[in-house]
Image (cartoon, rainbow, N blue to C red; front, side, top):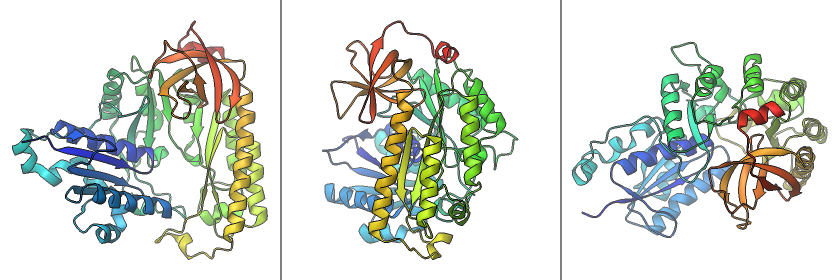
Length: 441
């Protein structure tokens, strides 16, 4: 019998990307062969997102694409869109197999148990860790799931409400497996990472995980994914400041710089709280990069409220700002708020904020010109294939020409010139360790 083929599509956050990798390894262990674009497959796994209207549309579009590509193929739809919107999926393809988020860990057992065992000779043993991360030079490691913040605009707590924290021993085992596979940087991620330990039987928190991972030989970098302002405790800040392995980069969502809007959003801080936090971080951790999310067009966002956001963004000088528009999500509190902005005003604000964000990014990166930094190479740059692309520990995207270097390597470079979204650099072969670089700064 010919080997069955499978194709994966993923939308959304780092946690979704991790979940797809987890599912991928289950399929491959069970005898499936993965195929990519240009080839049809026997089975399509579509891991959806529902954080915005666009995410919904893109998820449904992928279902249509799979159906066109192989009308007889098995289409498995999982992820956040399945939790509350299964009927939308069934309207597009009645035969779609719906797998809710909590069913992902045993997806094959749920779907094809007898068929796979007989055709591929697999015992379908479920392994609760991943061993590599397809297509990435940095591995994402999911340690937490669920959110109970209930921001008024956000659908996530409605589709991922159950808090889960992966046991520390399991996290360490998984990280060790990834390091053995050659990964030198691990990105710790969760739906709400700062809630790690909540919903757990043991009294642990994020710092406890970090301390265990720091001791893994061969792991050079640990990076934290998005973390809410209220979860950056003094203990966590101190750990980031003194660690030899944690990257000097934090993604801390802002959403708005106006106190009235923050209150309507049900965010757990004021603009001054955020300002004070960034000031503290920059004082404790030299060269730290801040990246953030800012929402434009939340109901009730006046010109003054928008100006307050602009002013705060200028103050914190982020390396990157993810600018996105408010999206009305059914079931959320904000869905009942009146929207006052028209599309022309919304577009103007987005363009202006992006311009300010670009200026802030330039000013931040300018501080590092002429400096030597270590870069983790992520492979050839798609837009500029003559260069290798990589990241400094503080998340500056670097392009370097180095015929002797390769993906996954950490090399020492000198940053020379800001160019588009990158900094051009030249390789310096007298490399030092990550810890020595941190000491020099």
